[in-house]
Picture (spheres, one colour):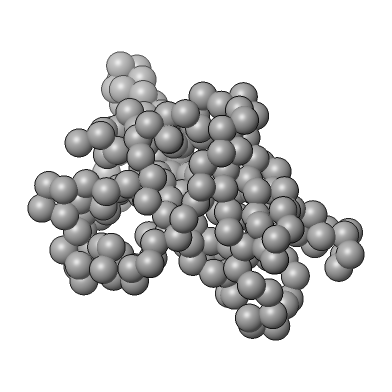
Length: 198
């Protein structure tokens, strides 16, 4: 003989429903726009990564209708013993299957409301900058890493810009990249989270 099941009171049922709702809402709000922080075990640096960034694209119709080159930039804060440095950790990549080294890496700059912001790659190795492992997922197998020092002022300017694009210069020719994925809300959250201003 099975024991009789106890029924929840209406108040207890409502409480369970509210709790379940909070759990579901909590899971839903832990989205990709939230920054994440971790201790890099190889470099002992505390790394804070924005939940999203900027992706620029350049159409390459000479290869295929949907062929594009991309530039991905994600803000990252590296804290080493209280000294903070802000970077764009990014990738230059493509949907086109190109032989390795077939094209020289372009020199990039952002164009924000007419202001030119050069993206000068860091000469130091990622590990020397505090990155034992890449903080941003590789978007394609043959993507090239681009790490650029930036500042809180530049990030704030980009968040407020009305017009935003990127320009790649290769062999003296300019190549315009249009904003493809606008993750400035994640950058704003990253800034307000304090990672970029401590």
